[in-house]
Amino acid sequence: MNNLFKRILVAVVGIPFAVVVILLGGWVFTAVISILAAGTAYELIRLSNRLPVQGGPWKAAVFSAAMPVACWLWGAGGMLIFLLLVFLVFSITSLRHPPQQGFPHITLNLFAVVYSGVLFGAMILLRNSGTGGQVLNGGWLLLYAMAGVWIADSIAFFVGSSVGRRPLSPVLSPKKTWEGTIAGIFAAVAWGVWAPIMPEGLLSLPDRIVVGVLIGTMAVFGDLTESMMKRAVNLKDSGKLFPGHGGMLDRFDSLLVVLSSVYVYLVIRGIIPL
Image (cartoon, rainbow, N blue to C red; front, side, top):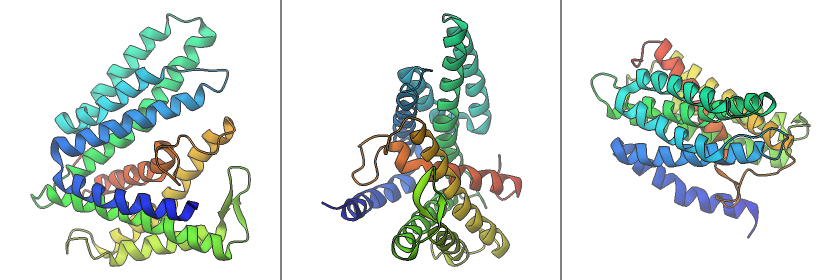
């Protein structure tokens, strides 16, 4: 089974599941996001354990799983309070180790919770955001941004594979090309402007353009950031959960950064409440 077929198979199964879960919202969506946050944090810490510094994978996984629940129950304020609590817990537990171990312990665990818990938590906040009194609009915003990432990634993959010649980052991701990246950004902007699933009047044309640019560019930064982590420990994939895609970090690296960026932009613009 070649890599392309595996990617298509995962998409055929995963995309309908994601759509249903997002539209259901509530505790179902929160439970799924919490599981993904825990798995992503666990993979991240396990990657770091190949280095001289180490974190606690189960501890980071539990706190990362709890973060989306806090966002669901108490919103952005709950995220902040819970993050402060996590910082206090990791600060206290790190004192059990010698300084050379305590410092990387708290640093890695906090980063894992921010990367997995906070960024997945932003998906909860975006899903639960209400515009015009309709909470379901948050579901459409989430699907709108996620679909843009999938489209940009697919276009970048096919263009880069067929006509790509100039590597974007030879050290971090040798197969990613400037041609594919630019094509992906244009595809994201086109989707941002003409996406048929966006309810009319929810976003203005300038906002759609900006969101499209955010989707196209932040997806690249998210992917390169995760590539940097894997290169540091000489691994191709963070795991083997998704055939053709790797682990949870591999599958959600772009989505996490994109959706968080879109959420921040929409809050700054006053389109959705904090």
